[in-house]
Length: 226
Image (cartoon, rainbow, N blue to C red; front, side):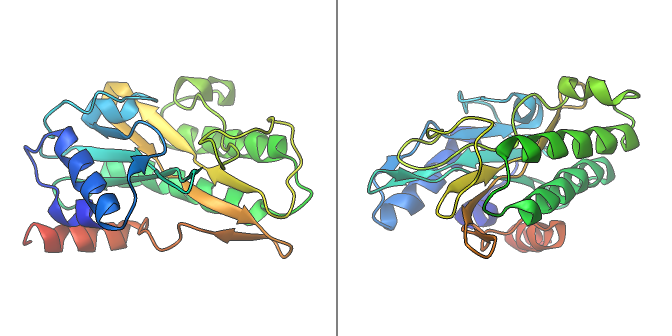
């Protein structure tokens, strides 16, 4: 929330990293779980951008992929927001596709489901979304804009043990992180939550962090005085 409320055009990416780390330290957390990613504009379309050294331009989407390490357990959460306060129509279209896919995959989580099933479903859904966005004409071409798995195990390592064909069990914690990366449009969107597998299905551990377009725009517009 601090970053959403304090980010302004012309700030440097590393300033947002500093704001986030200050908040973590104020809450008693001393370490990142991994090198934080703060990418704006075309940098958001780079999968593991870690330089965090560019100036944020008006109209950019900012992608933040961060996680604290607490008692040796790591979080891994990604959110995107418009630095200018509102998403452009194109940004909304791309963001909405990614968010809808994420919600559908989360709803599938339960003990006994294979991680490979989640991956396959996410890829198919993102491919259909990319076709609707006019990015591709063949579903097999989705790898141009989505080049990673939907999930990984989370624990004492950010990418904890457990293969892509693992069967989920009660007590597992996994990420759910669909994304679309469009460098030719200087645009990248990834939305990532940490999800606990429960006997009844799932519990989204990061559910209190805003991700709906209306929520994000309300916070951003209030922050910049619109």
